[in-house]
Length: 67
Image 1: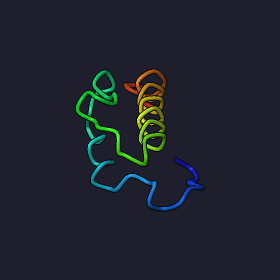
Image 2: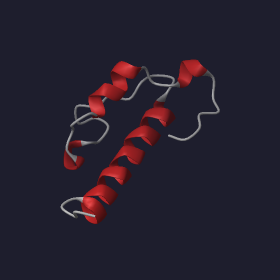
Image 3: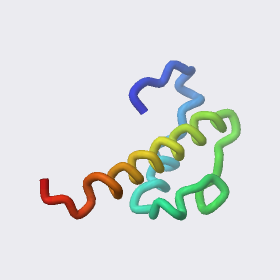
Image 4: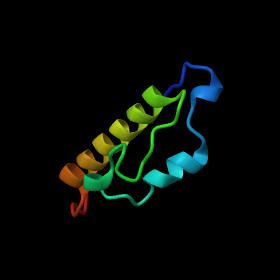
């Protein structure tokens, strides 16, 4: 996330972001071990979608590539 232009209480807490660490791309979905947060549903959905995109780009473009 590059910018967050909402009230701070709408941002998911760090412990929620920690759920995304080391979670495989295929398992990274809301409702699959990652719960949405009341009042921050759009933020949690956006965070999960963004993390999935970054992991997919890494897997496709960089993983195993020595450069």
